[in-house]
Amino acid sequence: DALLGCHRSYRSRPTHGIGKFKYLLPKEGPKKRKEKVQMKEIDAGTEYQYGDVNIQMTSYDLCLVEHFAQYVHRLCNRLSIRVNESYAMPTKTNEVLFMEERGSKMQLDAVLTTHQRVVQIRGLSSTFAPVLLEIIQSSQPEGVHLLMKQHTEADFKSRLKSRPELEELLAEMS
Amino acid sequence: SCSSWLPQRVPLRGSHWQSSLLELRTSLPVRAQPKKKKKVDVKKEQAQKERMKKKLKKLEKAPPELIPIEDFITPLKYSESNRVRSLPALSPEESEKRILLLKKWCLFKQKQDEAEKKAIKTLVESQQEALKELHLESKELYEAAIRRDEGLFPFERDGPCHSPPLPGYDPPEGKCVDITKVYTQ
Image (cartoon, rainbow over all chains, first blue to last red; front, side, top):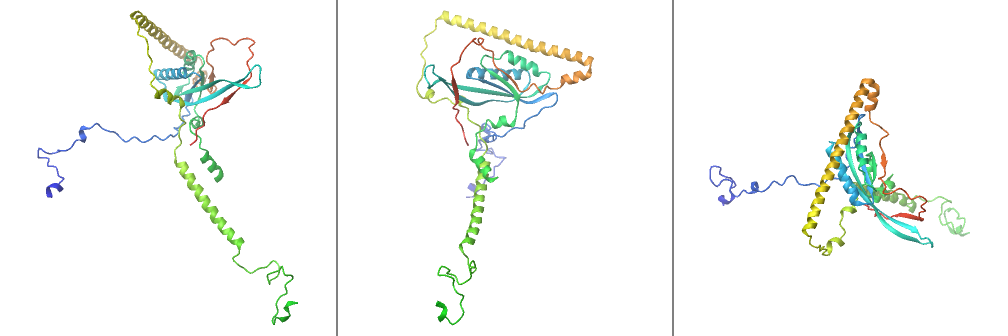
């Protein structure tokens, strides 16, 4: 009983550390916690620098807009412009109906999907901004609509799901 | 008329509808219905408010979720069946041609990339030189030039078109209906 209950390891003995194996396994690292979707602080920039700027590329063609977004991201990396995030906005689907020439009924022409990719940059200097704009415009492909604007909270909120129950309750409470 | 046999004085009742012995519009202080309603109402309202507050807290605790991107979700019909493409074998001449084409494309892309880098370099250099000259000319103008342009953003531009618009084109009447799926939390 005394032998079984003993937990002391005798450092002088050759059997010291017998049974240990965790040091042989690869380090696991800290447990992954689900990253909370929280809005990061929006940088307003200084007089000589623009803050958070969103480069939004929209098109009906998915591959084209995806590749253009990758090109823009790589360009910013190469020019040492800090890229905060590079994400996709939710896809919009539109049904295009047209009126037949002889008839009053609307006919379905096509179902179009609009894809949008956003590359968010920070710290663009005021002197370099026109140069970047020029380069991006010169390589803008056909059918891709480019929009560059400053990042706002509304832009972030448009990525989130709507919560009608919460809004209803808040309306009732006030 | 019915009060004649009573020994003590009793107030006369006006009519048989008046059931109470007291005067009109008076009654004994009794725990009657109207007062009970008030208390129960207040309690119910308070309980309801508490429930709403608890529900609000619970909803607010849940973090907001991002709308899932349909582009990144592969439709099931492409992963279920065994879709295998049977391609014909390439002849050596064809594969040779393709490799040479690939090399030509690589060279073309390299030239394009180099031209872009050179363009950026020349743009920045000429800009710096102009700013230097401006600084020598007048300090105020230089300061004004260095500042950021508030009117630059938002900047919008459509991609180049494949062909110019057809003259005298009459598009058919129609409409666009937005059928995007609305996700709620």
